[in-house]
Structures are given as structure tokens and as C-alpha cells.
Image (tube, rainbow, N blue to C red; front, side):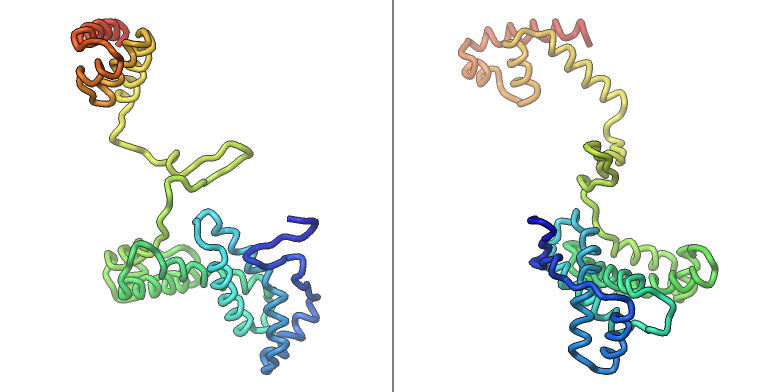
Length: 257
């Protein structure tokens, strides 16, 4: 970054034009009337919206240039379909369209392959959910969505779950300065109980009571699966000495476990 210049996806944000509301409305009318130059200028003036949206997807490790191009498609669709008679800000209308286009791209290019029929069911379920939300004034239940589509509740739930974006355990969910909480910090591992944790801690504390050579023997034997012969060869003593030191070390550790 130099001065006020910031380059994102090869676009110099400092060079992007900014337009007054009246000029934007005039260009919109001209573009809808078929003026290609007005349409191009309108797209160029709203690229900042695309750049701001794709920053939300930065942690997905996707190619930002690809997301920018997809976002531009969403922007163009929004500009072509925007109704100037509506009392809605252009950005308010465009941003959801850009986000939707990017999310469709991510779902269709997901490493986890989902059948076309299941994706179609999921998209129908999303549309039905939005319609029911407006009609009911609340989020509909899966059973209500299924009833609206004439499908089973199980089919609707499976379809919606299939298009969910996979989450990395290392994705941040909260950050305050240098303190970051990751997904893995909020996932319970039922394979590890409190008793396991206390036992491992007590073993570590008992290990700290050993002499350096005894500690190395225990680590090689019980944490790395080495034989007494292999440990003896590495340390440079006889197997009998390794056996004797190992037994003494275990006796010492038993006092503290």
C-alpha cells in the first residue's frame, strides 16, 4: 500500500470513481434504456461494493481474483434488475445479490460433491423458507418448509445440510486484539474425558521428577515405541542398563501418579 492506493485483485481502489446519487440515478435510467457506456460507467462506479463483500470470504482461502469476478457477475445482475422506482438504496439491493452469487459459486465448486437434484431441492427449500418467513413473521420449521414444497421433512433437512459450507477447525470465530478463538476451541471431544486429562497431567509431572537420561528412555520406550535394544544403541549403553534404568524410572514415577 502506498499513500491512499490499495490494490485488491489487481484493482487500484484509489482509481475507482465515486458518483453522486443524482448521477447514479441518471446512469441507471440510461443503462436500462440500452446505453452501453452508461452501464459500463455504472458498473465501474460500484466495484467497491464487490471488493467490500469479498473481504468477508477472506478466511475461506479461496482465490480472491475468482471471487471478485463472480462478485462482479452478481453486481451486474443487480444493476440490470434494480428498480429505480423503489425507495431502496442501490447498495442495499446490490450487496445481497453479490453475496448470493458468491455463495452459489462456492456451493457449486465445493470439494464435497452434492448431487444436482439435492442442490435443486435445497434451493427450493431456501426460497420457501424466505416466503414463509415473510408470511409468518418468524423463521419456519423444517416441517413447515416440507409442507410448503410437498416433500418429506427428512428430504428438506438433508438437502439444506448438504449445501452448508464446510468449516475448518482453524477458522476464527472471534478475535479481540491478539486473543483469537477458533472453531476447534468450541468443539467438544468426547473421546477425552476429564479423567484422561488429569492422568496425562500427572504423568507429565511424574516425568519431570526423572533424571534426563531416565526421561529420554521412558519417552523412547513408551511414547515412541522403541525397543530396549534400539534405545541402548541410541544412548550408547547396554540393553541391561536400559532395562535397569527403565525399571527405576517407573518406580519413581509411581510415587507421583
